[in-house]
Amino acid sequence: MTARIERVVTEGVVDIDGTEYKVENNTWIVGDDDEVIVIDASRDADKILEQVGEREVLAVICTAGLPDHVGAAIEVASRDEAVVALHPKDKPLWRETWSETWPDIDMEDDGIFEVADVQLDVMETPGITPGGVSLYCEALGAVFTGKTLQADGPGKLAGEYPGLADQLTAIGGRLFTLPGDTRVLAVHGDEVTIGDLEPHFDDWVSGSLTRVDTDGEDDGPLSDGTRISGIKLSPGDD
Image (cartoon, rainbow, N blue to C red; front, side):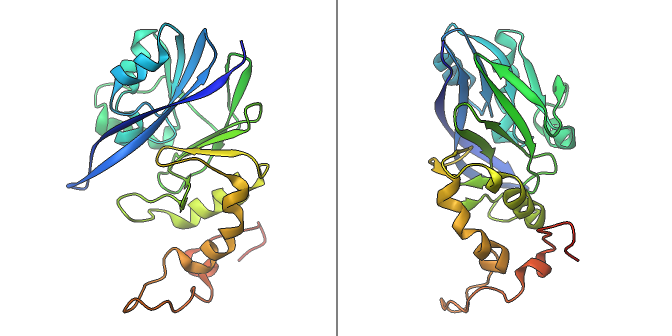
């Protein structure tokens, strides 16, 4: 059977540093009529497994260790004794949700997962979290970007950019090297393509994301946002 991509949308509240945020999450299912991989199993395991149906879950992959990425991971994986995969740098975040267990697989850059007749390539894309990853499926023309890159640009955490330099470096150096028609499938919001977002990259680097709006007036981007945020666009940048 030919592999395909399906989306399950769940809603809930996430507590970050004592503040509650209402969020809507995308859980992505990749597979065919026999087997699937679940990406970012958020809070509602029943809804996710209803979409999976009788197909075998081979793995649950978490693009980050945040609660709204891992909240249903154990329950979804346990039905078929599937493995749970997470980048090791996000294990401390994982333990905030699952204090008595660990993921089964430590993902690393350039790792590969196979399901049906396609493969998912692991790309380290830190910034929102130290161990953030994206998963590129060339055969399906899609990249699952977690919070790293969304339809409205680089994702935020509680309205802030925890590691903007790393995030933009990952976006420019990894995600924007993909074909322009690649579908960007994030953990929040609608889909977009790499080609839709790439033209905005120079504005992000120059400081448009962190510019302070004074009295509602647009004073333009920071004059040297690259150096201010420490972004390195090539190995020779100092």
